[in-house]
Image (tube, rainbow, N blue to C red; front, side, top):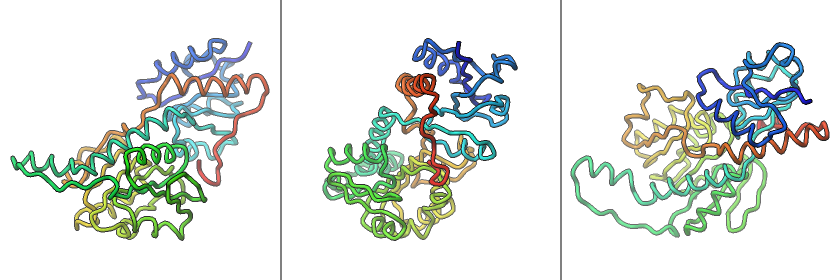
Length: 314
C-alpha cells in the first residue's frame, strides 16, 4: 500500500479541506490528508507532497520528500523557501487556467479600451458625456509573456479584432502575433503598445522589469494590466508615471504584499483599478485531475515529473 500523500498549505488557507476532497476524488487509490493528520512514521515514508503556498517549516517535517506538486502555476515562493533542499518542484500546467486567464485579459482589456474608468469617474461627478469611440483594430495590445497563458490570451484578443504583439525571453512564433524576444527587443515592442498586459512569472530577471524608465517607453496615455506578479512592476516607478499622466490607467491584480494593505496608495489613486488577485483562480477539478495523472505516472514508473528550471525560475 502506498504511503499517504500530505496536502500542505499555509495555516490561514481556508480552501485546504476543499482541495483535499477534490484531490481524493481524482485519485481514489491514494490517501490524501492534511499534514497534521499524519503520524511521525507516516511523515517519514512520504516522498511526494501536494502544496499550496506551503510553510517551509511544515515541509521539513517530511525528511524523505523528493518532490512537491504545486496546485498553483506560480512557484516563486516555493523556489525561494526550498532553495536549501534538493527537491523537484512541479508547477501546475492546466489548460483551464490558461482559458480563464485569457478571459480575464480580454475582459479587462475591453474595460480599458471602452474607457470604463473614465465613465465611472464621470458618474461620480454626475457628468453626462459620451467619449469618442476607437475600434479595436486601431488598438495594439502587447503581451509580456508568450507561454501557455500568453498564447491563449493572444487568441482571445485576436478574435476581438485587436492588433496583438508579444514579448518573451526566448523567441516564440504565434500566428498573427508580432513576436519580440530578449532584452534588446523589449523597448521596441513597448513603443508600439496601447495596452500592455503583463503575464510574466516572477524571476530574478523579471523583478523590477517595469520601472519608470521602461514604462516611459510606452506611448503617452498607454495603459497597463498586471496579471503576472506584483514585484515585476516597480511600485514607485508606476506611481510616478501615473502621477504625471504618462500612463492613462493601470489595472493591478497582483501586489508585492497581499492582501494589499488598506493604507497603500493604489487603493485611492484615480488612475488605478485594484483587483484582489482574482484574474485566474485555479479550477480545483481540472487541477486535481492533472495532479492525479502525474502522481499515477510516478507510482507506476518511479519517474518524477519534469520540474521547474531553477535557472530560468519557471
